[in-house]
Amino acid sequence: MRFFIIDDDESIRTMLWHIIEDEELGEVVGEAADGADVSGEFLNLKKVDILLVDLLMPIQDGIETIKKIKPIFKGKIVMISQVESKDMIGQAYEYGIENYITKPINKIEVLSILKKVMGHIRLEKTIQDIHHSLYSVMNVDHLLKQNVNPYKENSLSASARFLLSELGIAGESGSKDLIEIMQFLYDYEQEKTFAGGFPSLKEIFRNIALKKLGEGASEEELKREIKASEQRVRRAIYHSLNNLASLGLTDFIHPKFENYSSKFFDFIAVRQKMEELKADRPAAASSIRINTKKFIHAFYFEIKHLMEE
Image 1 (cartoon, helix red, strand yellow):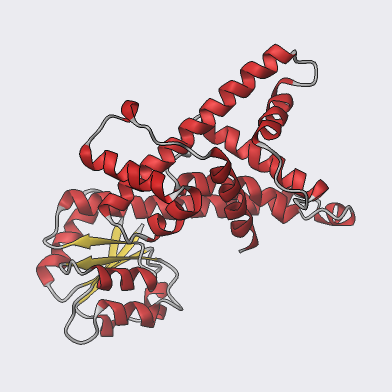
Image 2 (cartoon, rainbow, N blue to C red):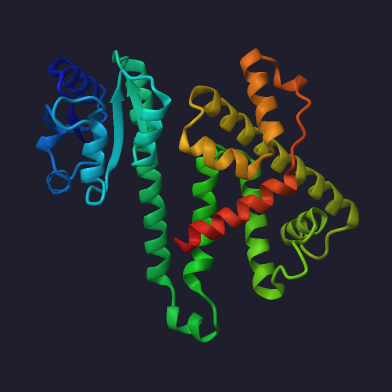
């Protein structure tokens, strides 16, 4: 990864430089003492992946710098700030920062945040590579003659994996079930549309089980698989709720928390989970009701939105 640092404090620039290179996160390809000294074209020329920019600088502050470079600069931006104003930090997120580091600089925090941002970059690149690979091996003309949109179908799995990662549940066993459910809903919509409403959860899980076990499966086998699949999905959904609630406790105005928590969960469930985490109550004692249907509906429409971008 290639980093660039903008901060009017030379000691801060030096400290960040050493952390990045000593911990082998990548290469610092340049630094500047003020936002006025840097342009989007210059950063792109330097092939900068991650820009670290101070919020308060004497000539051109961090907000103005981001507004100037953002239309051109395609890398990620991490804000450096000793200001704890939620309004100012929220404004920085609105203009496109990925995360922020608080002053005084803490090495553990810097490493944690930069590794998260690097992970997002790698994930986006992986998704792009998957798209390119899929498109290159497809016989697009043949599929188009059959009125099939190959780009939409092949991006469904990639979009689902991206969203699972955003929710922090890509590694959960239920993530595979959720991807299969999304494919079923996509095929269902293409064939029947949702004019008569969404299929019921019972219908969804039964079809997923049939696809996995085959038509020759007994009713008892189907019931066992349906129950196991439901449990895996519910565990994954609960972990997603836990992750979002943890994020909300840390940063209530974080874009990911604001965007996903209200879409995927009922407000009461999110609030209860945040209270549990704050009180450090064990998950086993939780009485939170998980709305699986709401989550699956929201997940599907969010994927459709990602596919259309």
